Length: 130
Image (cartoon, rainbow, N blue to C red):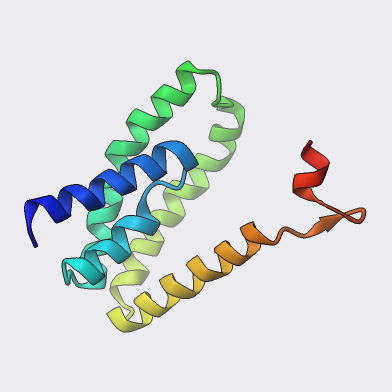
Protein backbone atom coordinates (compact mmCIF):
# COMPACT_ATOMS: atom_id res chain seq x y z
CA UNK A 1 0.00 0.00 0.00
CA UNK A 2 1.16 3.48 -0.73
CA UNK A 3 2.17 6.04 1.85
CA UNK A 4 -0.74 8.20 0.68
CA UNK A 5 -3.28 5.44 1.40
CA UNK A 6 -1.78 4.90 4.85
CA UNK A 7 -1.93 8.63 5.53
CA UNK A 8 -5.54 8.69 4.35
CA UNK A 9 -6.52 5.89 6.74
CA UNK A 10 -4.72 7.70 9.56
CA UNK A 11 -6.33 11.02 8.68
CA UNK A 12 -9.86 9.60 8.76
CA UNK A 13 -9.20 7.57 11.93
CA UNK A 14 -7.65 10.53 13.75
CA UNK A 15 -10.41 12.94 12.78
CA UNK A 16 -13.16 10.48 13.68
CA UNK A 17 -11.45 9.61 16.95
CA UNK A 18 -11.00 13.23 17.95
CA UNK A 19 -14.50 14.35 16.96
CA UNK A 20 -16.54 11.30 17.92
CA UNK A 21 -14.43 9.65 20.61
CA UNK A 22 -14.40 6.33 18.78
CA UNK A 23 -10.67 5.79 19.05
CA UNK A 24 -10.35 5.28 15.33
CA UNK A 25 -10.45 1.48 15.50
CA UNK A 26 -13.65 1.29 13.51
CA UNK A 27 -11.76 3.00 10.69
CA UNK A 28 -8.25 1.63 11.20
CA UNK A 29 -9.03 -2.10 11.35
CA UNK A 30 -11.25 -2.34 8.26
CA UNK A 31 -9.01 0.15 6.45
CA UNK A 32 -5.94 -1.98 6.99
CA UNK A 33 -7.70 -5.30 6.33
CA UNK A 34 -9.50 -4.15 3.18
CA UNK A 35 -7.08 -1.62 1.70
CA UNK A 36 -3.71 -2.84 2.90
CA UNK A 37 -4.54 -6.56 3.03
CA UNK A 38 -3.16 -6.69 6.59
CA UNK A 39 -4.14 -9.85 8.46
CA UNK A 40 -6.87 -9.30 11.08
CA UNK A 41 -4.69 -10.03 14.13
CA UNK A 42 -1.99 -7.63 12.95
CA UNK A 43 -4.55 -4.95 12.06
CA UNK A 44 -5.98 -5.12 15.57
CA UNK A 45 -2.54 -4.83 17.15
CA UNK A 46 -1.53 -1.94 14.90
CA UNK A 47 -4.85 -0.23 15.57
CA UNK A 48 -4.40 -0.46 19.33
CA UNK A 49 -0.86 0.94 19.12
CA UNK A 50 -2.06 3.88 17.01
CA UNK A 51 -5.09 4.43 19.22
CA UNK A 52 -2.88 4.60 22.33
CA UNK A 53 -1.09 7.60 20.82
CA UNK A 54 -4.20 9.33 19.50
CA UNK A 55 -6.06 8.69 22.77
CA UNK A 56 -3.34 10.46 24.74
CA UNK A 57 -3.54 13.54 22.53
CA UNK A 58 -7.34 13.56 22.31
CA UNK A 59 -7.80 12.75 25.98
CA UNK A 60 -5.47 15.54 27.05
CA UNK A 61 -7.23 18.03 24.78
CA UNK A 62 -10.64 17.06 26.12
CA UNK A 63 -9.26 17.22 29.69
CA UNK A 64 -8.09 20.80 29.09
CA UNK A 65 -11.54 21.65 27.75
CA UNK A 66 -13.19 20.25 30.89
CA UNK A 67 -14.75 17.25 29.14
CA UNK A 68 -13.10 14.53 31.23
CA UNK A 69 -14.61 13.38 34.52
CA UNK A 70 -11.72 11.76 36.37
CA UNK A 71 -14.03 9.86 38.75
CA UNK A 72 -15.64 8.11 35.81
CA UNK A 73 -12.23 7.42 34.25
CA UNK A 74 -10.96 5.87 37.48
CA UNK A 75 -14.10 3.73 37.72
CA UNK A 76 -13.75 2.32 34.21
CA UNK A 77 -10.01 2.23 33.49
CA UNK A 78 -8.86 -0.59 35.82
CA UNK A 79 -11.33 -3.14 34.43
CA UNK A 80 -10.73 -1.96 30.86
CA UNK A 81 -6.96 -2.41 31.22
CA UNK A 82 -7.25 -5.85 32.81
CA UNK A 83 -9.76 -7.15 30.29
CA UNK A 84 -7.83 -5.64 27.35
CA UNK A 85 -4.91 -7.82 28.40
CA UNK A 86 -7.13 -10.90 28.56
CA UNK A 87 -8.89 -10.03 25.33
CA UNK A 88 -5.57 -9.66 23.52
CA UNK A 89 -4.51 -13.15 24.57
CA UNK A 90 -7.91 -14.59 23.67
CA UNK A 91 -7.93 -12.91 20.25
CA UNK A 92 -4.65 -14.63 19.42
CA UNK A 93 -6.42 -17.99 19.81
CA UNK A 94 -9.32 -17.14 17.48
CA UNK A 95 -8.95 -17.61 13.70
CA UNK A 96 -8.70 -14.35 11.76
CA UNK A 97 -11.85 -14.97 9.73
CA UNK A 98 -13.91 -15.31 12.92
CA UNK A 99 -12.38 -12.13 14.37
CA UNK A 100 -13.28 -10.27 11.17
CA UNK A 101 -16.85 -11.50 11.36
CA UNK A 102 -17.16 -10.64 15.05
CA UNK A 103 -15.75 -7.16 14.39
CA UNK A 104 -18.21 -6.61 11.56
CA UNK A 105 -21.21 -7.82 13.55
CA UNK A 106 -20.28 -5.70 16.57
CA UNK A 107 -19.79 -2.63 14.36
CA UNK A 108 -23.16 -3.22 12.71
CA UNK A 109 -24.93 -3.74 16.04
CA UNK A 110 -23.44 -0.54 17.45
CA UNK A 111 -24.44 1.42 14.35
CA UNK A 112 -28.03 0.20 14.56
CA UNK A 113 -28.19 0.94 18.29
CA UNK A 114 -26.84 4.46 17.84
CA UNK A 115 -29.07 5.27 14.87
CA UNK A 116 -32.25 3.95 16.50
CA UNK A 117 -31.99 4.54 20.26
CA UNK A 118 -34.42 2.91 22.64
CA UNK A 119 -37.31 5.07 23.68
CA UNK A 120 -37.62 6.57 27.13
CA UNK A 121 -41.20 7.28 28.25
CA UNK A 122 -42.38 7.34 24.64
CA UNK A 123 -39.58 9.63 23.41
CA UNK A 124 -36.18 8.84 22.00
CA UNK A 125 -33.10 9.83 23.95
CA UNK A 126 -32.43 12.54 21.39
CA UNK A 127 -35.84 14.14 21.98
CA UNK A 128 -35.32 14.03 25.76
CA UNK A 129 -31.93 15.75 25.53
CA UNK A 130 -33.29 18.85 23.79
